[in-house]
Image 1 (cartoon, rainbow, N blue to C red):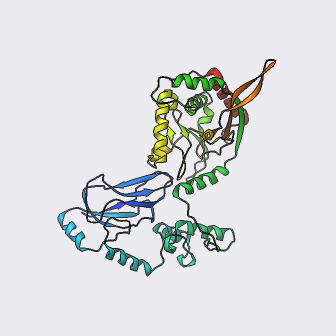
Image 2 (cartoon, helix red, strand yellow):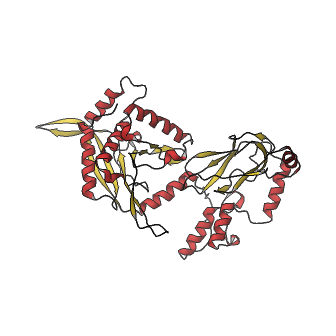
Image 3 (tube, helix red, strand yellow):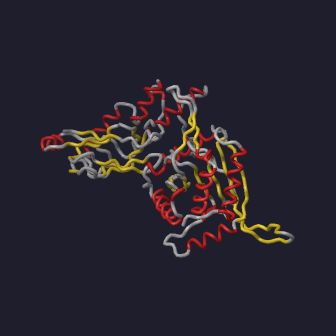
Length: 401
C-alpha cells in the first residue's frame, strides 16, 4: 500500500511551515516513528515522522519550500512489489535529500520551468483570492512566488496602491522574515488592535532579593527573581480572577463576544531566541514549588533556544511575564499577548535613594508595568491587582518552596 505523508496539523494558529531538512534518502527503509523531514513553523522546529514501516518512495518537496497543512510531503511504499516499482519509477527529490538522484532533480527543474515557480500554499491562496500568478513578481529563491507575495499584492490592491511585489533598489537587499519573526509581526499587529493600558509601580526589592538568596541555599537549581515573580504573579491572579479571563471575539457562526476562563494559572515566560521571541508556558504555577518552577523554567528556556519546544508548551497561558533585566533595562511596558488579558513587564533592580523616617537610605528598587486588556479589566481592578502584587513582593508572600 502506498501512503502519502502529509504536513500534520500543528495547532490552530499554524497553517504552514518551511521545509528545513530532509533526513532520509529516497529508497531507504524506514520504521514507524522515524523522522523523515524537519519543518520550521512560526512556533518551533517540528519533525514529520513515518506513519508506518515502509520504503521512502519519493520526496515531494525541497528544502526551503513553504508547505501548507495537509500538503503531501513524501510517499511511502510498503510491500516488495511497491519497493520494486519505487526503484524503477522516477522520484521527485530535492537538492537537500541525502543521495538524491541528479536526474530526478533535473526533471523536476524542467517541469517547474514550464510554469511559474510558486509555492503550493501561494498557488492555493492566489486561486482563493482571485489573483493571477502572472501578475506577481516572486521574491523567494530563484524568483519563486511566496504566500507573502500574494498577500502583498492583495493588500496593495485594497489600499489602492500599485499591485507589485517589493523589489530591492540599487544597493539594497531583501531579507525574508523567518516563520518566528512573521509570527511575532502578526501577533504584535493583532495586539495593537486590543484596547490596552499599562499601570506602573516601583517597589522596594530589598526583601525580595534577600528571599531569593535564602531560598536558593541548598537547592539543586538556583531560584531566580523571575521564579519568585512567577509564583507571586500566579497568587495575584488567584486573588484577582478577572486577570485570568480572556476576551473572545464574535465568531462567524454567530456566537457573541464572551470571556473564557481556564482552570488553574499557567504563566508564560517570554524568552529571546536567535529566531525571535518565544513564550513557553509553565503549567499550574499555583500548585508548584519554587524549586520545581526553577527547574521547569530552565528546561523550557533551553528547549526554546534550541527550537525544540512542543506546540502545547507554547499555548494557553493565563498571563505572561516579560523581563529585560538581563539586558540592563530599567523599566518598560510590554504589549499584550493576544488571547491573554494581562502581561507583567519587569526591569532590573536599581539602587535608589529613598526617604526613611527622617533620614535617607539606599534601597534596591524594581519597576513593574502591568499591561491590561481594557475590554476585560478596568483601571481600578488592575490597580488593586498591581498593588497586591507589590505587597506580596515587599514581604507579604508565603512562598511554596
